[in-house]
Length: 119
Image (cartoon, rainbow, N blue to C red; front, side, top):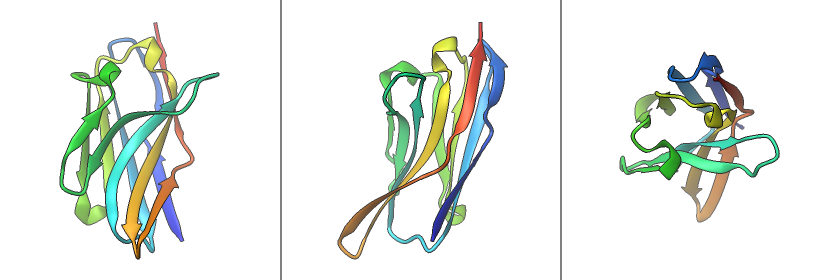
């Protein structure tokens, strides 16, 4: 069983910073990417940033230059450093781990951590 444990959300004023962490544990093999999605009230879940096992990074246009994703492969942990936060960044942030193993592509999700940015 795979578990993703997120931490680091909270309330911050506009212009502030937060760092999210997500640690994956359990029987997890063949990680191809780790990333973060967010979902604001009334909106669909969308990609914020992800990083492949080879280290390639992908960011949503709205966070480029403000957010940085990184990972510790040895610990199966992914981080999201969020700077210059704005009220529109307010959302529940979900950790995602994608694996490809035994010919199967699987997506695992954390339970989410709330980020609230006040103006």
